[in-house]
Structures are given as C-alpha cells and as structure tokens.
Amino acid sequence: MTLVRRAPLLAALLAATAALSATAMLPAAARDSTVVRDGVTLHFVDAGDALDAATQDAIIETFFATYPRQAADFNAGAPDTVRITIDPGYDGVAFVDDAAMTINPGWLAEHPRDIDLVTHEAMHIVQAYGRGETPGWLVEGIADWARDAYGLDNAAGGWALPTGIAPDHRYDSGYRVTGAFLKWAEGRHPGLVRGLDASLRAQRYTPATWTALTGRDVDALWAQYVAARAAE
Ligand SMILES: [Zn+2]
Image 1: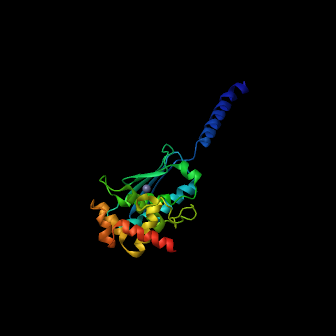
Image 2: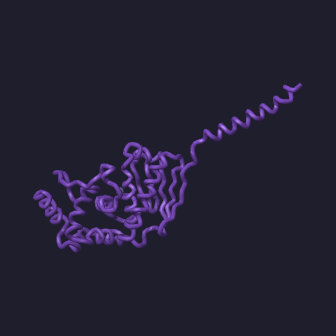
Image 3: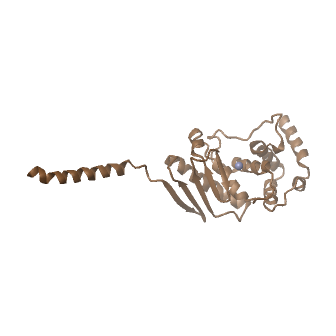
C-alpha cells in the first residue's frame, strides 16, 4: 500500500527533474542588446548566438569607438539609430543597407581579429549616398580609407593599406588600393576625402571634382602618387 501511494509522488518528482534538465539544456539566451551612448542607439542582434560573447562585445565596442567619430567628421545627418544583425545565412563578409549592418559570423570564425570590418561598414552608414549613380570604387575606397584612419586594431586583423603599387593597380581599383591613394592624396590636400564624400552625398560628384579639390585631374594625381611611391 505504501508503494502504491508513493509511486505518483516519485513520478511527479522525476517529471519535475526532467523538466529542469530540459530547461538547463536549452541554448544560452540569444544576444539582443540595445545600447545607447552619446546619443547613438545600437540594436545588436545575434539571434542564434553564432558568435561568442567576447566577439559580440568587440563588435559593439568597435562600433561605438568609430561610428560616432566618422559621423561627426563627415555627415552630421548620419542616422542616430543603427542595427547590427549577425546572420549565419549571409555568405558574404558584411554589408550595409541604410542604417542596418549585417555580418556573417562564419567570416569572423575564420578571421576572429578582423573586427574592424565594422569600421568599414560603419563608414558606409555615414556615407548614405543614396541610390543614385555613385562610383563603387570610390565608395569602397573611402570606406577602406576610413577603416585605416578610424580603425581600432587593424594590425590585429592583419589588415593594412598597401604601401607598394602593383602593375595592375589603378586609382579606381577600389578598396585598399584606392584607400592608400586617398591617404596619400589627403596628406597633400587636406580635406580631399571630406570634399569627395560631400559631393557624392549631394549627387554632385564628377571626375572634375578631383580637379576642383586638388588642382589636378585624377589621372595626373595618380601618376604623381606612383612616382612618389617609386621614389620612397
Ligand atoms: Zn564596403
């Protein structure tokens, strides 16, 4: 009789224990943070916790260390609310659409120190050139110039602007090649990148913009750059 009375209690205890175990085995809570600093709001979402907490934190810290400075220097009208989504379904590295940045966690798994990709993408949010005709090589060149200028730890990511010029490099090669050219040209014509950026955002950029800002057309400026590099 005693056993008959105890059996339901034991079953209930076992069921409760099983339920606790199931709860404990669920994945950690997905990271969905809203962080506000100095008037900028960041929604950071890693719904599947594809990245470890240290990498999530590094992305958030890099964003706040670079985006507000880039916005202050280039575009006072840059968005004050930004979303970063970690998306394992995206097979590129990262991209920006308006004020939303998407990052592939698979890339960071292979390149865990490449956190300053956030700096490059943040500059795209600042650029906000709209959907008009903007030369992609210059858009990406400015973003890589900004990654070099504002990045927190590019060296850790093994990332640097090239210091040499390969035979196939041109001013419109884009990305780091254009970024290195912009860095050199900005050194001789302070404010050049700001001027290019402003003309792009105003949909007023033409090749003549280079002449207006530097006194030379871009081909002549590139030739000067190649000669200067060769003389180093
Ligand atoms: Zn880019």
